Length: 155
Ligand SMILES: [Zn+2]
Image (cartoon, rainbow, N blue to C red; front, side, top):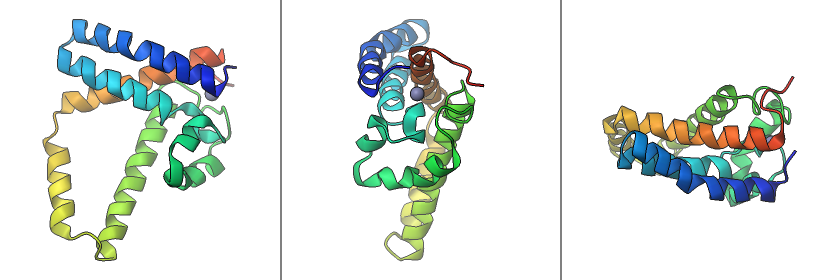
């Protein structure tokens, strides 16, 4: 199992080559999007968010949003350290928290419905292909993490 520093180092080393390969295979825009998502995936959305880790500390004052996640997901379980499942759960959890915060801000009159509707419309307008390459980048960084941990399929 690799340390947090090793995971960070390999994430930073592989982000640009990954972006370059996607850029060559698909297009430059998808390469840039997937490369940035790879970095974000490895540094902020790492499978190790299920424990006290460097990735968790990186969230600063926002790290408490991952407290319920850490309570429910056991460290190195299939729900955090398994290809596709781990990334899907982390991304879905983050989207859920984002929606919850938007509704809370609207409920407390700190954001009005026109602002949230505008944000929603903007998110819907974003190219579906961009979302696909965002997920691909996060998932690829997760695979790198699992390979470095030495066991991509926990029991
Ligand atoms: Zn791990």
